[in-house]
Amino acid sequence: MKKLKLFTAVIAGILFIASCAGPSEKAAEISERLEPGEKPENATIKTIDIAQSSVAWEGTKVTGRHYGTIDLKESEVYLVDNQIVGGNIVIDMTQIVVLDIEDPGTNAQLQGHLESDDFFSVATYPEATFEMARIVKRENAAEGEPNYTISGNLTIKGITHGVTFPAHVTVHDEKLTAKADFDLDRTQWDVRFGSGRFFENLGDNLMHDNFNIKLDIVASK
Image 1 (spheres, helix red, strand yellow):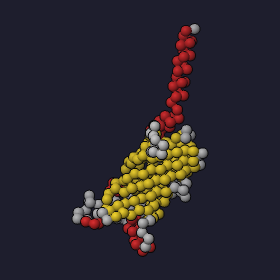
Image 2 (tube, one colour):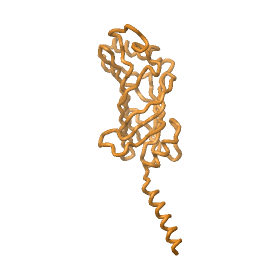
Image 3 (cartoon, helix red, strand yellow):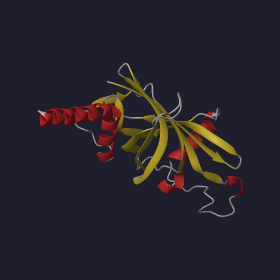
Image 4 (tube, helix red, strand yellow):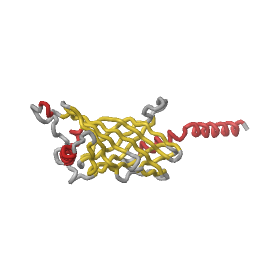
């Protein structure tokens, strides 16, 4: 009888520990073993709403800054137990928009330069991709502050590098929203125009290597 009671207590303890593990731990384990962009089995797949989502960019130089947007193409994120575990984002590099220049001619000139081989070689590489590889939930994150750390492979101009950035992600009423604000070093993707790291005596033509990206993602079924 004592052995039976002991066995029952052990089983109860195991079940209690398992129940305390919670969905976030399960999701974290799945995310950790996924390959970049891989769809986990039995995951909820949510399609990113292109019309409601945006990618904003900003580049700076000695004499000022330029900013604008880039459109997304077909993209999706993967959820397990309402926790984001992965995803694949496709960026349409043919849709680079400049927002800070009002004059149509000057605007078109800068847009064309960004599309050229000096920058993103859009004719050769019309798409960029971000394949999420590991997503870690930040426990005890303050309200409105980043509550996830997202890592993945970013491919621009056919060159792939790993990136990691903080993000604020919410899932409510079958709708996922994600916001992120981070910097990237453009020279890692062979965008060297105006970089003091590769060219001398640039003076006022010097452009800073880091550029800013702001993601605002909305996804649903």
